[in-house]
Length: 274
Ligand code: ZN
Ligand code: FE
Image (tube, rainbow, N blue to C red; front, side):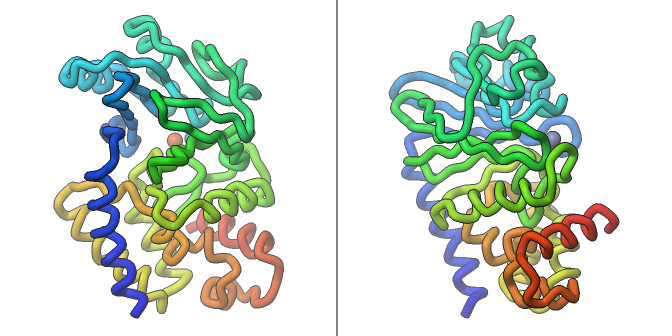
């Protein structure tokens, strides 16, 4: 049964994280932003993804005795770049972000575009351009570590708002992520899971994987625990924005058999007004 697949996936995930050589630390800041610190023991290199605030990052670096090597930004919004300049001043780290965002990423040192591969120690990181939430939004895919840091493009059971891009662009961006290996861990930039899940259930009330996921999420939130990371497989079976080709989603929207990108456009509109 589908429900069992969802649960066994969580166990798999725990096993994989234990075996992984990278240490990934999640910090909750502001109201619902996640900052990620990623440390490679072998090289001693450390990256931080989307530092909204400096103090929690500096405190954790000190606690672990880590040196910050890189800031990796997914996009230019203040809740993702807010601590760039302070962290660079205090640690001497390099700031890496999208080339096209050169003028609006504070302190940028290196510009990236689609297909670029950078490294943290010996760990390759592939860059995807995921326009939609902003023009120039990028995500960082750790190809050998089953992890993608996707900023405000893909959320657990949701996706980012379209501030600068078109629905077509966001649809293509999400398709790229949907095609990553099933066991890829999804590290998004916000804890929006509960609200996203309620919307998802309103679109696909009969989706058993979604129902099961919501039970797990409710329990995690009751214990004030993070619901992130998810996995690409979990998103494929629960996230309506990755399921615009499914009959359940199309039926609710009254758009059976129409091109997926049109279904996506309508779904995003509904979420905006929800
Ligand atoms: Zn944003
Ligand atoms: Fe954000």
